[in-house]
Image (tube, rainbow, N blue to C red; front, side):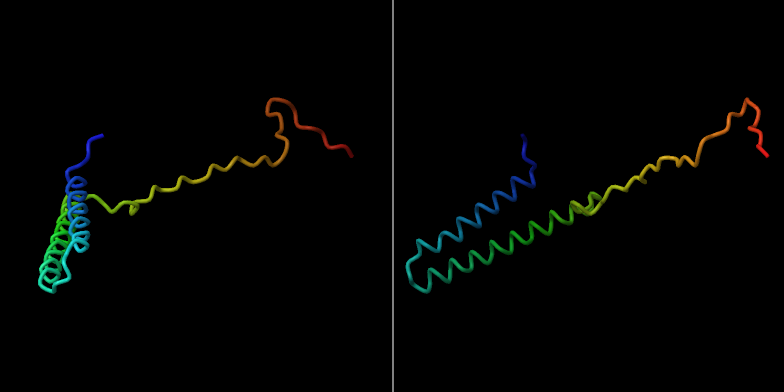
Length: 99
């Protein structure tokens, strides 16, 4: 199954964010290294937000609604015709009233 370009980009950014976050484990406890890495993480978060915003704008410009926002119309329930009683035979004579 072919992945869309947007999905591939999203997964690449997700992997980069994970690797950057896991980079904190290997840092020496000096303030300079932690500060530098924190700036890198903040820049990555801004890039991810910008990418997400661009994808959202492209969706709007293409005229695609949000998933789940369009609901199918409900079809009216079929009601069986009510039978009120026996039907008279239209070809024969009407029954006589006994008096």
